[in-house]
Image (cartoon, rainbow over all chains, first blue to last red; front, side):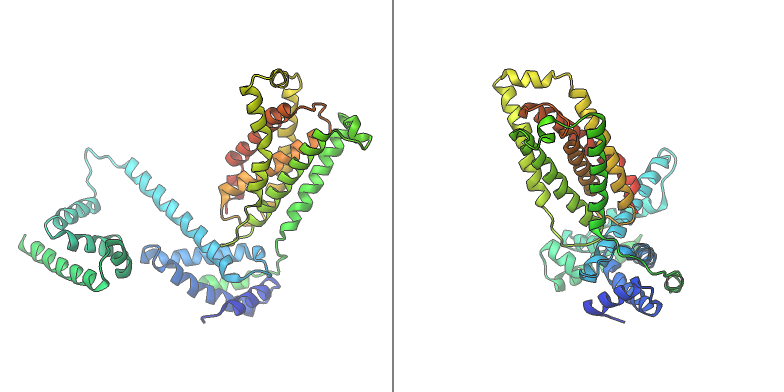
Length: 174
Length: 209
């Protein structure tokens, strides 16, 4: 269900009164909206978890919705809060992992792979390396990468395609 | 999705959180403290006579309005929202900063009145009373805020410290015998500043969700 602002506001007001049918519709619409909201903001594997966490926050804080105000800014504020909280947790977890690693003896596979990728990217033209880095490693969309590199979307796609082809050839030659 | 079923089953009717309740609670706490100050310390004689000195009127007005404006911003910040701009409290804070500014000028010009205010024997009591009153009002507000869901936790904590500090200073001002701008600029500002910093440091864990 893709609901409009007026419908969502009405469902939220009914939910505050304890209407379970309205609440189910509201949560289903919220889940869809949140899925789209988080889609470009966090790794795909984390989207479902974050949607569920945010639905639980909506449930706990249903009383904070003000019926005189629109619903979408309310859910957007909660979603943003949960998203930032998740990023903070990931950052702290990574920091802890870095602190716990014995660098004199260990070299994590992921880091080794990352270093290998960086080394390979240095061997292809800069434009292709940048396009691959932004879209395939940083996870940006083609349009976001195009804006960042000041190139057209078509050129980004071409650079990614050609770059990956060269990388595949290099890896195959090893 | 499993969560949705569980959440629907768990749904109970809720009373919407109303920002004006924060105002009622803070007003009740402020009036209670003001009454305690009047009973145990005594109200200024000019206020009791209904003819307060001009400086008392000015500082009371500034402190009350600063407390009111920050309290309003605090109450609104308890409800998640985007795009709601509430910057009135910043203008009030700027207006209130005229007291420390004039005090700074006094110090710069080495006016004797600055040193009288700086060495006033009641300064510890002034700062202490403001902070104790602020802690009382702030605790009531934290209790209320825990029903809400502030999305800017640090800013909300600052606002809580400023609001409770300003209202605490307002209560003390009813008793305070000083009529000097420098005294307000130095010691009232210190009390409010301590309240704000303490709230910023101590409150976030209680209101994070």
